[in-house]
Image 1: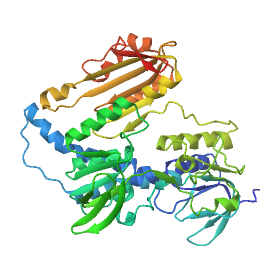
Image 2 (image 1 turned 90 degrees about the horizontal axis):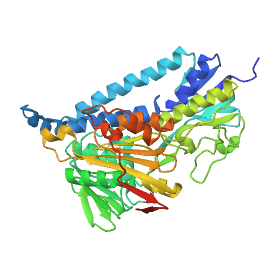
Image 3 (image 1 turned 90 degrees about the vertical axis):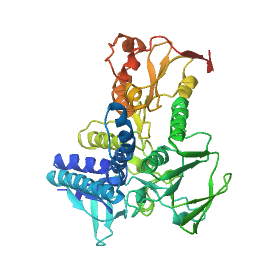
Image 4 (image 1 turned 180 degrees about the horizontal axis):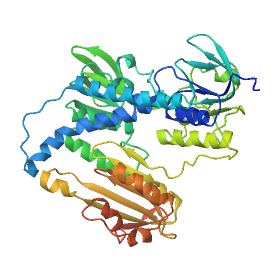
Length: 461
């Protein structure tokens, strides 16, 4: 008989922690899981899911405009922020219930409390002060928005967390940051009628993405009416009549209704008792793990954003399943972080998998780049001036497609399918042999027969 209270104790009720707890419990292990806020984690409660719902909401004004080109007469429209927030809250509550139901059906014990480590096998439940023990501990506490505490007036700003719960929609907003969270919220707020300014210290938004996608999205956002100020930073935020005053380094003082800081996320490790348990962290406070998600303490694992590997919900779930295989099925499994399809739910949308042109040029001696830019069929009648961009990066020697990038409607959906083909190691010849499905935007992916240009030894030819 085990000398521990639990076979597995999971700290963190996000997608990764819930998956690990639920599957372990379904295997007959005695499992408890603790969450201090709400089950579902960042993704479900205040991340991907509510964000995508807000993206849908923000697109309707364009849908109404486009309808005229197709013969529809749409009457006067108005937007009710409070109705959107209430509908979103109802859906999030439903999803949280499903997460709890899955855990309960698997006989995992659900604890609604903060949990902190006392030592390598002991956990303190903060709500009651009780301590429990576990043979194995899994830490899946995710990340949190960086508050940018060095910014004077940072306490007057909001993060993506608060953006989902604003009492009123501001008339204007400044968003600091150039990553996908900043870009997505810039499009959301603009689409809902908010005068939007994006400020980013870098030369171009979305630093890790293919340069063509970055430029294309920037141009499209500016054409919509979003103000983008690159090479600039916020220096101070203060209260002013009717809102906030934002002092910038290069663009003077801006007067706005709200400021959203989207300046990265930090691993959620503060106060967890990791030092007491002997768990090592890196300079950013992320938990250091090996290839199997095991920490510096043999019986303690960590996964998801708290490890600062790849900050995506499906990655945390995949890491959880590898943990189950390693710990409970005698099948040591390393998470596979290669060729992960990624979407940015901007407007237009980005979908990408594999290497950017810049990354591939550093890795391969010679590349073939296939690039198509065109007006989508819907835009011919709607009158919208949008363009789609599709791009394939091919290793000239092996003919393998090493990168695929899309800017335009449903780019994320296409990227998910492309993820399978790149994962399977498909070559450009496989793409060429595939019959096109007409009329679709995606047919361009299999009808680009001649390279637009080549890159040899890092230089475009």
